[in-house]
Length: 117
Figure 1 (cartoon, one colour):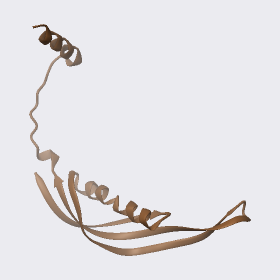
Figure 2: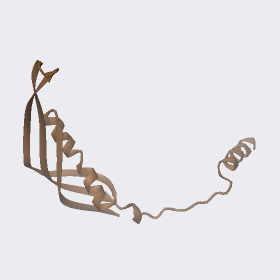
Figure 3: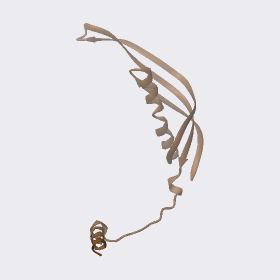
Figure 4: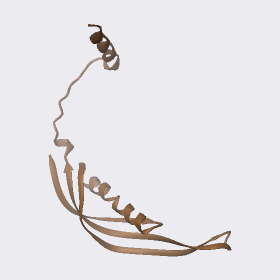
């Protein structure tokens, strides 16, 4: 039912600050693992991070093409993250099936009958 896996995941992120770019990249780990394994995630533990690419792009931004020049930066990172993930296989859980007839209306009237006694 519970499965522990170790896997290397490649993620990338971009943003206006270094922290935002790294945070965006790390936020994609869960989605990539869940897309591959089709299970429910219980825990993700990063074991190691390797930076493959870190780029700082600088450009000059101007108001109305001439006025108020200012320097802007954007950052991009590509990371390989070794993770240990604990997954829960939902398909292996046996749920008890209880069928009630009548739906919501009978549920309302049954509750009224119970309180009248």
